[in-house]
Image (cartoon, rainbow, N blue to C red; front, side):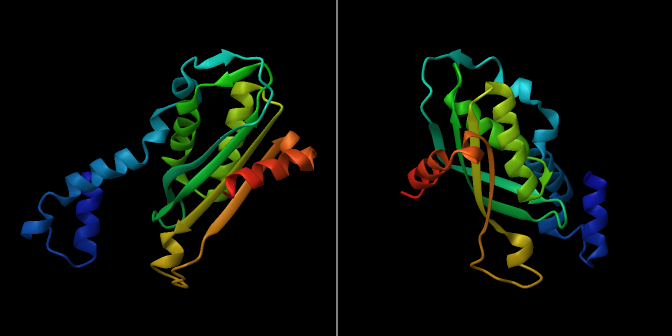
Length: 180
């Protein structure tokens, strides 16, 4: 990977031996490995048994989970937040695990639409919840720094499963609670 970054630096016409660039291939490779560490983990590793029996069947919401990802089309960042809700069905997931699931999939080359669905499907498969809802709001550097260069655009995606798809009241409660 370091050599690939060295070649990119040369290809854009820069001198890789210039003082500020000497260690850039190594730093860039290390950064890319970190930004894509989601490939090195599995859902099972992330959840790590943190599923607990609970009588609650009331909605659980974790909102404003920061996320950072790289678009698979341009390898440019998209940055935003995820709002995740589920209705337990006898089991609850450890609170930090929801944020870790968001990180697991956002730390891969992605499109936001797929990321939203992956998070929802994963939480549903782990918890067997009555329903899962995920909304992601993000700004995409590929749209801000290049192309149409729209600085204030925000993309919103949602994935609704089970009760969140079939029951308008559950969906409305989720939407209402994350809008505060």
